[in-house]
Image 1 (cartoon, helix red, strand yellow):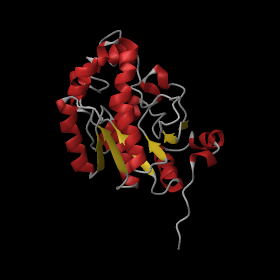
Image 2 (cartoon, one colour):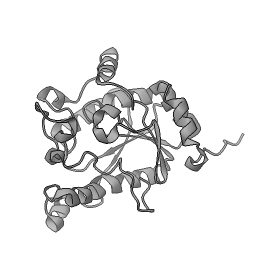
Image 3 (tube, rainbow, N blue to C red):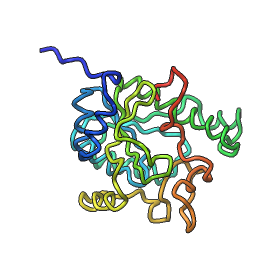
Image 4 (cartoon, helix red, strand yellow):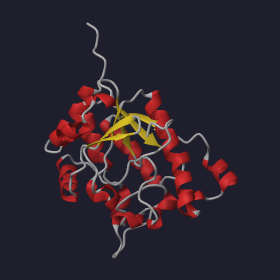
Length: 245
């Protein structure tokens, strides 16, 4: 029997779908994506503070879902250790992607882009995050991309829907409406760890040069990119037609 062709993003009525999925559980949202885009789903992870939640939820439904991890070359040592721990524990089908340009070459040609204001940060994001993620989605033939974004993360995410069209890829945010309390409860229930830097006051963990500890008076987004921006480029709509994201 021939497998039916998977749904394409342009066949989806996003408004109707979001009305339906908004009231459903995170597992139902993941299940919909896996069934609707059979064999063409991918999950991304930064192995950040609460990443164990999405990794556990998704792999309970599809143990072989490709898990894309972008290694910028600027991550904390603790992040690499955390990635090894969760990969082994959850038996992740991990796909590691790195930028086409090494960190040393970037700094030789452009200097420290993260010290060059918004323009530098955006160029840094394109080189180190967007390009490898686009490459991953193409090589994995992904048509739907699962992420662990939550509305509580930052003001830039407060209006995000469960499902979003981002250029040529459909993104699904299964835990978009989860609170910090729900995250904590899920981690406790399943004996899953926070990122080790959580205990040192980090509420969000990315590259070493763009991440700071949380302090009184700060907004959550202030802990990344010195408060200049929240998104690294992966979750921003691009106007360039050759981008999948």
